[in-house]
Length: 108
Image (tube, rainbow, N blue to C red; front, top):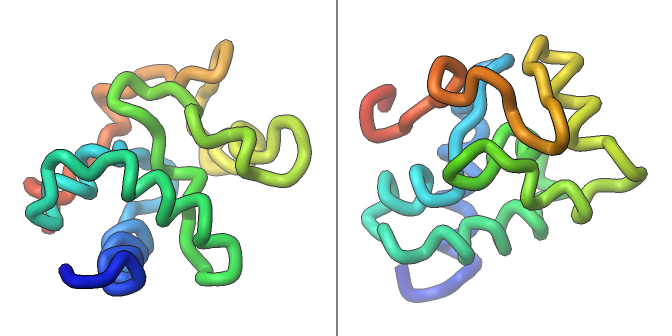
């Protein structure tokens, strides 16, 4: 993955596969792409994804926190998008995270 743009495109391809009502983590996407130490770079890709038709709201940190929420318009847009898919969020944390977690290493 020579360029961040190429890496970002691969991140977007994976993120588009996250099913409705499920979540994954930055690290899980990075690991799937063979870049296990690049969770932060996946986060940067999510931050830059607004015009790319990517469900970035479904990507959270490794313990289910909405760590990227301040990159969404409005105060609680990330939470509202998740809740519209039936994902419960309390105090910026996905509830039943282990049950809702979608692992691309297992699913793809």
